[in-house]
Image 1 (tube, one colour):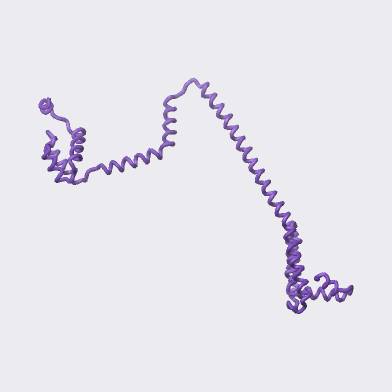
Image 2 (spheres, helix red, strand yellow; image 1 turned 120 degrees about the vertical axis):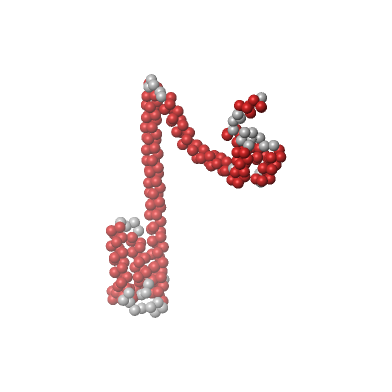
Length: 246
């Protein structure tokens, strides 16, 4: 029906053809029709051509804005403009499909080439490292003197680098437990006072242990352990005491 409208309007008359062109340019959908046409022309065009097409589209749309017609004045022309705008839009989508597929294919090929290049460079680096490693091994074999201390230092360095985090966590855990095992300051001071008064024979009796436990708030096991450790570290029996013990 749109083609019939165009043929019927022109009817072989040049004047009516120019009038029809004027009516089309004055129609509100003319800028949309021009944009759809130039969008089809831009598919696959180089950037400089796209730039010129955009300029031509802007100037053509500006010419159409001077029209005074409205939608509804000529229903046949309205149908003609709607149909051709829709047709050009569909044509643009059909034209862009193969170009999009081609661009996607080229991008995949480019990624594959990059992957091949990286893998080949990595293999070349690996071969070079293998060659260097074999030469270093030959030097070690031919070397008549090997410093054992240097090997020990290298081994210690490797172990420290590998297990430094684990050793650090163990040290922190040990320090926490050690802090937890410390006696309260006041209780320790009372035990030290008793120690200084009975230094010649720092072996409290059971009744003295009970009294110390009551005054310090410690249990007898803690008191026994403290005196055992204290005697091991800070007490040496005199000769008279050794003779008495013997």
